[in-house]
Image 1 (cartoon, one colour):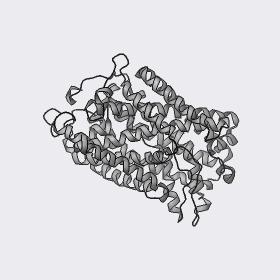
Image 2 (cartoon, one colour):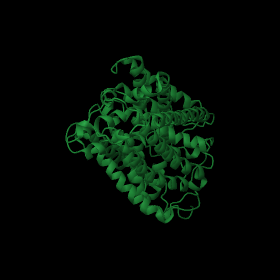
Image 3 (tube, one colour):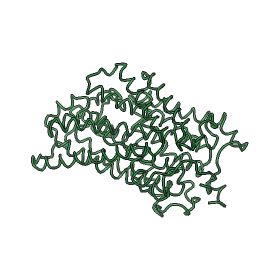
Image 4 (cartoon, helix red, strand yellow):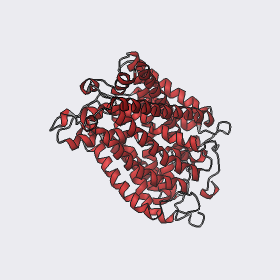
Length: 488
């Protein structure tokens, strides 16, 4: 820490499985597939699941670059820290601002998904006030867990991840055995959505992570690209392990492994699960009428008891996902406040020695999340905006990596892409530009696109009106790698 001009304030208690659990929980394939599978079926049809392994490969390229950065600069604040040192304080501030917006928006959206699941099981209307109460109570519970200390949060998250991994692998094994017994033809894996055989519409039920209806006319490839939304919404957040680097034992070695393996495991298990559940579809039209088709498929093949167990698995996974996102958001706020580039930095950089948790930052994420939930009429646009914001963060970070890679010291970290680094980064940039286009160009996302642009512009204005002068005067900021060349 002294090498990077910081003192150790956060307690290092997270080891390899805990670090992996952080990244795996943020990704949460159970949550993402559960919420978005209906969108794929309604548009691209069962064949749309093939976008999942494609997205996995693209996101793995991003994760490889992030793993090298996490090993070379094992600091809380992830992209904010890396971009500032590689490309300068302006780009670093912009990246940190976008990341804070993304993380704060996602907490209530994920917890709203949990409330929707509870409401669906209990038969409560989606517009009921009780769902908002459940969301707020869930966020308060998650905040209390964090305030009580990182050990408790890490324990709960590790148990949740163990449950999710065992549950998903168990479902894969059960479905695999059933499919071996039934020996389905496999034709359904190539079946297209009826509406997109020539032209039509892609529509899905309203969920916290996707729009209520996505209409699009055109050839099938358009529907197939739109099906990438399931993977693009889900396979993000692997960098959250890096955001807790200063709470991780041997972070320069541990975090890169956690980042890469979280994507590999999530992508592999998700692919197997999608293949086997798709093979288990007996009546496609009936399944498509369900707002959440996966429980219907599971129950029709494995029985009501397993179907009920899947709902429990989804609930645990969503809660753990929200818990980790709140942790990641609070650590990023703390990291920026520590450098005096966040409003009221003196408050948000405080870390009580008793808990070793930035309590004020946790409370800020909680309060803003509650406000976002209470004004949920506009939350839908913000949630859609949150889908593209991670890709923007990844894009700026990898471009900065290409720009400043030569200045990174090999003193820290054992993970390196070596000579293949620039090539991997270039392909990752092309991939991210494609994903950003898919998530922003369609007319149905136009309002969300403007919201995302407004948030980005807000960060630029704050930088030039307030942050830049503080950095130039020496009141705030950190030095770039070029300025630290004699130290690193």
